[in-house]
Length: 507
Image 1 (cartoon, helix red, strand yellow):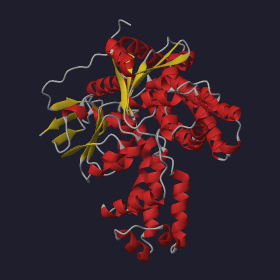
Image 2: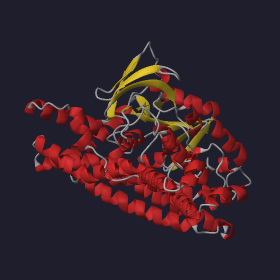
Image 3: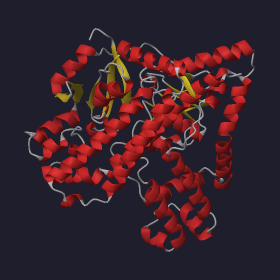
Image 4: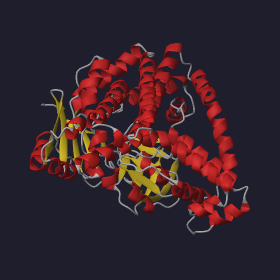
């Protein structure tokens, strides 16, 4: 408790149910699978905004222990990746079955058991998945190790290209996220729409495209319906909702406004994906990697793959369980929003009537609370007790006069533009093509805004973060880990983003 407590992660658009898996996973499941001490932490929750607050030295010590484990045995993360994929597949299968259940017909006991089974699958996946996460949160320990290693090799060999460029290629994403697949599917939809001039003229018109209008183009309507069926959940996040036909039409119109040639981009994306492995091998030869050094960089890429697999499986499970949450809310006489603030482990208590004054309790949680997991039990403080707890362990750092920030390069490039702070979907309407998107930590829900950004700047996260992964897929310059970007910059500021040096400067 004498350790310095810091913000390990920060995010908007959350609920206590989804975030509530992480304190137990860090304190109980992670130690079991990693064979390391528990990762003490607590979550401060204020109106959909969360801060994960952690003891700095403890997390650094355990994070460094994992990095050294990987350095000694680079295949270690490949083993964890296999376990994460296995656990994610089990969660997907459970979620697909859950989507077919008529929850209304289940007994309270069976509905409670369903939530319990979902919890166990999530904890297993997180127990393995958070091992690699600890090497990046809150300190980018593995990233810095790899960056230093590559910089040293570039210097010794006297190479002309910068270490950042080598790092960019050697950490290329080897898996397509579900969001990436959705983006490519949209491009194929646009290519199909361009073959029908009548429908294309409707798309260019600002009038709302109704279901009736779509039915006049049955071939294209089937394509839209298939797209929604396959991908409606990919931006669900913690709160939802899933998207429908209206969002698909809106995105197609955005692509048209940008003057995009879908066939050209699809062809380029196909070539780039085929060349990922080839480009990695070329860089490895130039840097004269030994077999063990190649494994080390493969382990680094595994951390990114694990994050993608874990995030997609978790998102799909929340999407699939939405009707179960609504049914629980109906039986308990509470709102869907309130039901999302029941933490894992409490659902059976709610259904059995063991939670007293539940409505008042959940209302206080939504307003402000702190979630701590101790002695294998969740402890949730609200109101003044919660504020006193945070004040005891965490001290806010004061900001001086700052006009330039340094962070990590996630995707190379350099540009200037106007700042738009985007943390939640309602902020996206501010974005115009070429604006600089500045966020605490990007989430799946704000990907449409990321697609039009000239550059992306995030306060939180390392190379395995959502901002880093998506920026690379979009080929948008990105600087992450700036810590205070949303506090230093405001809407309308003109900034220069140098994503070669990792510098963001107010002009």
